[in-house]
Length: 116
Image (cartoon, rainbow, N blue to C red; front, side, top):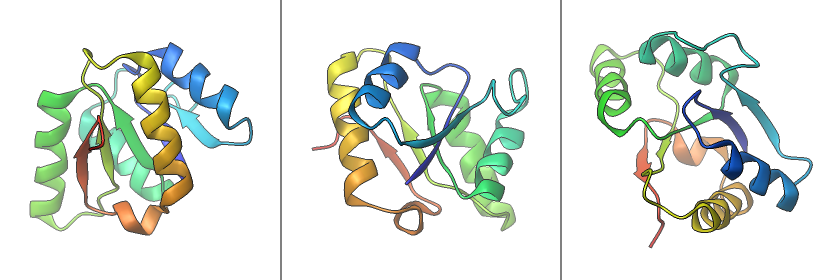
């Protein structure tokens, strides 16, 4: 599984996930010079690189994702983490996603943590 972490993602979550999976294939919005870019631009970058986009931006990112779907643009998976979710739970769920699925499972999908 390949991840792109949006600029708003709590870095404690990213660090915790990397402690569990040091070889995780990941990029951040900062790595890709995507800070301050539109949600559509970030989604396009994730789609172009075949990455699951992880974000806390529940309101606008879901709307941008739907707009891309409606236009028929390539749409990556979108995994949304509520700000209220404890860091440890977010790390556990992201670890499960990385182990139990691959990018094709997520194309066009929007999912919210926590996983059930």
